[in-house]
Image: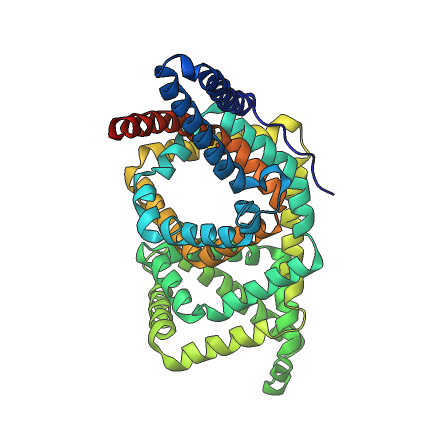
Length: 420
């Protein structure tokens, strides 16, 4: 179903009326001059000018009308030019657009003058803009979280985490972490806390009693060296007490021999984790065996669901809370953009690179889209739209044709009379 034809603009109607009025005026002058010609030679000049004006006006009317439709509805060849050549004109327009507008050499200077990050920073720092972004994100958050909480998304997150962990060199990472821990003696501080807790726990009578019973039951071979049950328990109790005292001594003495041994063990572990091929291979094997477990993804999916649940709870709080926090973050980002010129330059360069690559990759699609849209456009509708937009200027051709024709007719008549 075609859309109703748009009415011509008032300015076009006025120009058509003016051009037609000049034609009718020339016709009226021609009639009067022809009738009054025998009375004076000057009327011959007027008649010639009016006659040529009518010819010029009619010729230019035909030329202008032939662009858009058949003059007087007659199927004269090479008329209704735009409608007849619509597809070819569309293809040429699309090709012209692709060759002279959608090219890197034409677009790059414009992009270079466009400070995208500055405009973005100025827009983000405006309170109304930040509030608009915050409110939009608040409204979109439930739908976004619901989409992210689907089984395919959770499985994808688990696979992504697994792939990233497989690419991580846990051995080197562990060595670096231990190195950072030992650089300022933090490992000794952790050891202090552990020893103090163990010493305090092992010093309790109830704990020592349980340890004594447990060790005595395990050392059944003591009965074979002539120790009775009482002697075994006494010896075991002394062993537990000695262990407890040792833990306390190590915890209280920062220069204890066991601490130095612990330092040596840490240094050896750091060296092996970072440079020992055997240790690195073992860590990689343990990592792969851990990741290969069938139920490995379950905790990751559970963590993802818990995260989304927490975010959903935050989003369900009073309407202004989340929106205001987001608006504050948005304004902070805008202020950082305005304050950091180097960051703005980097963003502009990246945006220019991305847009030029997108333009280069989409040029043919854009050109094809323009050609297809013009091809799908109704030919008569296209002619009407073009006439409504450029018809006013084309009426000047008719007006100029009338005036120039009159002048040419006058000159020709004068030359004819001069020669005769």
